[in-house]
Length: 157
Image (cartoon, rainbow, N blue to C red; front, side):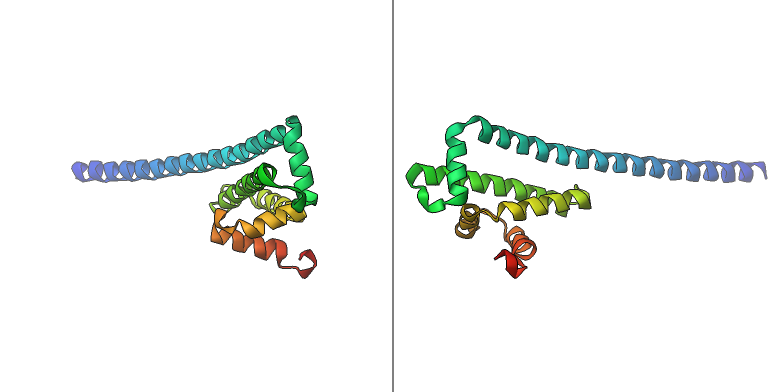
């Protein structure tokens, strides 16, 4: 009879051990998920800061971007190439933010902030022109998301 009691006690202790192990793994996964989310937000903000710094500290680039945003047709040759490349880089950065949101790495408020700033960016005539002519640079699902969320309202068109 004592052996049965010891076996039962061992089973209970083993079962509790397994449950505690699973709880621990759950906390580890949650902590890792929180860390990935924080890292995604940090990376997005850091790269945004670097692009802003490049724009502010480079007068030639600032001039090209300023003119391109309001009067795309005034750009030619290398200036137009640099402007197009700049806009594609900014929008690719926005696409990365969107992708992080799709993967659950950004909270809803962060996603909404990126979505609004993307739509605002696309109100510049030059940016809109590049968006329309450079469609192969962006994922089809991102393009559909932007078209739906930024241009779904006829007032924005």
